[in-house]
Length: 507
Image (tube, rainbow, N blue to C red):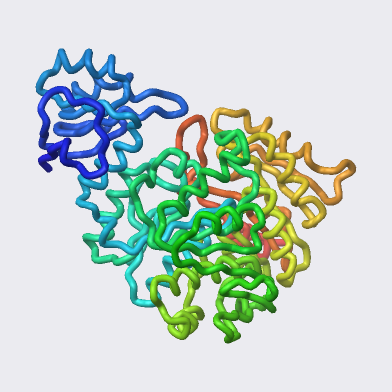
């Protein structure tokens, strides 16, 4: 694509050296991926500075270098007069606007729903994705569980666990538009908002689930965390707001000067949509939904009563997209479970296994309370400290889980560069001594899943909380493939072979 850099909309250029136009073949922020014709962006991250890799990018064929360090750019512009050097105030902002231009503003062909919140982002965004597709609006998905078009998951290595970097987002948007998808549901994390990954994207609907303390290793203060999340509602056309969340709903409503729908579980809240009388059965949830004076019954094959709130948020997003409530209610019985979000699996001998990504104290408290509502003999739960997150949160995970299961297995997810034992110890410190339940530990996610399954007997309920990012565990900077479901399948297949062998062996 031939890019006239001074003609890119909303792109603020401080200075330009070299040719004013270049034939650009790709947008790159990792010098390793540079090829002939790339535009290389010097993005400064937590661990490195992209300006250190300008030489490598040029050697590999970059035709444009975009950065903030004027001295470095000027130095190389003298050496390479045929390369375009662009100085900008913020490389991430420049990356967002040039990526949008390079991918021909594909976002303009999509109805975009952005979901933010400490808990429930993945579930709510997936509900939006599934609901839009059931309502004949082909929709894609970008989030923790991967990247999907309306036809299903695609093989795409995300740059970050939840919300990809802007160039990846606009590439995905272009692929959705090419396929004919008309909408995109995406998780929008606080860090993504702070790092300008969604800069320049105008969301048709911004959805709020809740807020509680999280990502303090990055934000340092709760106010910075809150202000980062509020940015989503400053770049939206309409909003869905959870009135039950005192931590953020008031602040959002002060920003919102466009169409919005509020939702609540409190009949006296004055919310536009109210969900009440939620019941759990073997087949899923039923609850009453009130909207504009009418109360209708909802039945969905989903579990976890708090998911009635997440589903109500998705319903509100569909209403703001112009869908009828009658059509929405007809679609709800067809809603599939969300991968790793109170996903209920059936195991041998009456066991049931719940996979849930709960990885905050608030979330683990909720999911354990919901799990206890399902029929079971004993409840055996796995909880984890996340090595790439704030260590101060880890003992709170134990306190949130304490007394809510018969056996708790403590492990580590994504140890990063930490000793797994240190992470496990940090979690265990949160338990009361003597323990209110049996506590076991395991030094890896794999060993913990096996330990949890070993502890189970027929009729037990097993909860595997926390879990994978992009089907992997992050260990010393590497993404190591991991699947709880594969471990479960292998464990019970091996158990059945052993049991069968024991039955046929001679006495």
